[in-house]
Image (cartoon, rainbow, N blue to C red; front, side, top):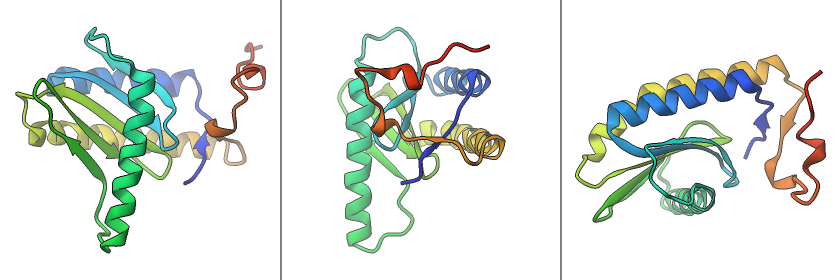
Length: 159
């Protein structure tokens, strides 16, 4: 798993704009960008009261477990996990080696429609992550190494 490139406010604003567009087009309840370690990077929602931090961690775990199963059966084209529910369904799509896109949508909406609208969003997220990587190739962020008791090394005031 590759480390997350260093993102800035413009990157997060673009992610939020893309997530909101996906929610509007796919009639989704929430959309999240998550690192593959399960940390929530950013999210947008229609106001549902979901615990998005926990969903991010569990969706990442589910994706990685299914990816491991796919590898065991020599499936090379694995890039998403779909969970169908009675009220809400969830689609987890690989963005790149470090990020996932998690989409929670009404169960009455077909997963094919959600995938259709997610594909161009994923492409734009990939481009932005590549731009962030080029902007600071030597800097990356491993969210799993964060000291949550003292996040001062990560969150610093801009000069």
